[in-house]
Image (cartoon, rainbow, N blue to C red; front, side, top):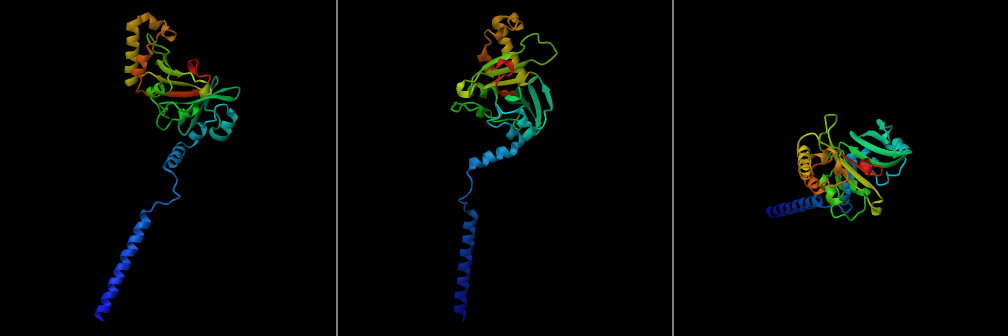
Length: 246
């Protein structure tokens, strides 16, 4: 009897090991119908941005304001001239319109959460794709453009000076332009501003800055590009009829 009982126990142990191995294989197997990782990333982006992603679609430029308000944003929070301000997912969305047609869109108060896929409004193939939450350096490297400022000397206390970078799109970009700007308060942006204005004034004199001759003359764009390379703009807008004449 003992040999028979021993054989039975050995057979039972072998079955248990086989069952455990099968269970392990099942647990670690990758389902063949799993979606690609990049698809999951896109879905996660859309899910994270909710209504914001519905505003910044590739075909929003040229759409009717009435369609946007009826299907996504609701009525504008405020209106100034042709610009309409909407509060979407806690973000301040700017929509520029002419005769009820959307000509530009953007965000005031850019951050990692309040951002949008800028590159989709321009031609593909740029050597440095501009990310949704770019620095001035990203935009300059990706598109180019020119720096400007509404004031570089004797600005007064009425409002903080604003530094901007404007890019004029080509036919390949559907003539879409870009405007990125930052209000100069303190911190790294102020340091960049002071270095740029200081070097410009040292080269051309204080009157050159006070009289705003840098708007049409040499603005030492290379200096501004270096100084603001790692600074994120507060505002980014794309389309046509933008501030700064773009």
